[in-house]
Image 1 (cartoon, rainbow, N blue to C red):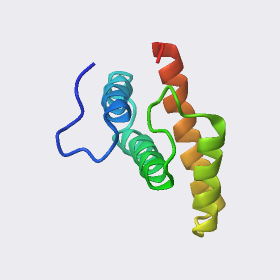
Image 2: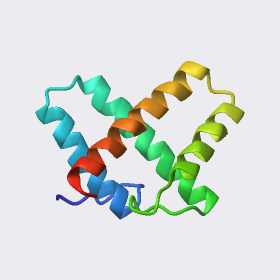
Image 3: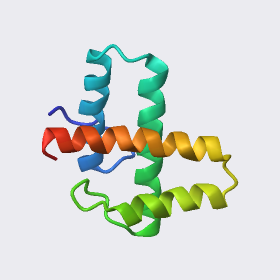
Length: 102
């Protein structure tokens, strides 16, 4: 896997996987807006995990961590459609991670 950009704010483990995931999406000819949307959700999750002191390694992230993130988005006043979109984006990321053996 390639390394995350040096100025990346995401955890190295997530950053490396996110870069590879983005490459995978582009290779599947996904719309650029889709790639950006998925990346934004993963970056927001990473920021939340860091702030909350939760694990940031993809192998250590559990359902309760993602659920806590989604609840936090709701509590910040995000619209249900936005929260749902973040969830669906994260589903695709974690599905891809599982397929990759991560």
